[in-house]
Amino acid sequence: MQQTIGRQFILISGSDTLKFMQSMMTNDINKLTVENMIYSACLSAQGKFLFDFFLSYHEHGLLMDIHESVAQMAKKHLTLYKLRSDVHLEFIDLNVSTGICPTYPGAFRDPRHKSLGWRAYDNRATETVYWDALRVKYVIPKTSVELTPETYILEAGFERLKGVDFKKGCFPGQEVVARMKHKTTLLKGLVKVKASQTVPVGTDIINADGKVAGTIYTQDNNEAIAFLRFNRATDSMTAGEAQITWQDHRELCH
Image 1: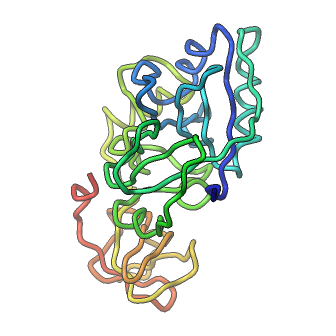
Image 2: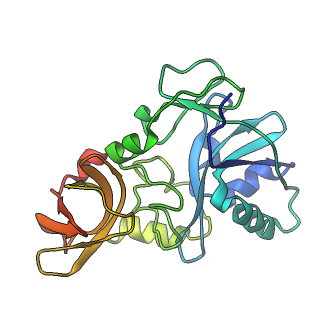
């Protein structure tokens, strides 16, 4: 059995669990069933990204599947907000299996994109998959790479990733998210670009006028996920020694 590297698991239990999580996360807890999982995030009061996670039902409550780099912070954050609610949070030992072949009984489809396969927690075999290639192809951000404490989730594509619900009601940061959705046009965001060669993650993208137009992140062959300021992006740009080209095809990321 091969464990997926970099994940930790928090069991959330108690009579107030559903109500509490509904008040904290960007997605709607009512979309969760025993047959599916949901993808969601928690935000700061200023509407910026704190952590993202998969949520599914567990025999003793809810199971949060979260990147290890933010797991301790997530548990501390949720504990701070639960006050006197009947909610209990504990780390549990678990393995997650992943793959892209047809789903088997007991596995959950990855809710972010139909091509991202399945996740399961029953010790079945994990498939060998080059996930970064899929993330680049479909512009799927990852915690601690494209998703940072400076991220606004709509700029990171959370709407197309089915990680936010605009009708569910309040959660920390909800007013900022709603304002960005209904009252502004996004001027920045994650997109896919062409890159002539690999450069270090975090390399600035410089436009034809010599101004910083964005940042290069995950790369695969001649493509990369980039964060771009759309009003500064030009047909030809550079990132270190790489030539960067981009066409405004954001709709193809859906």
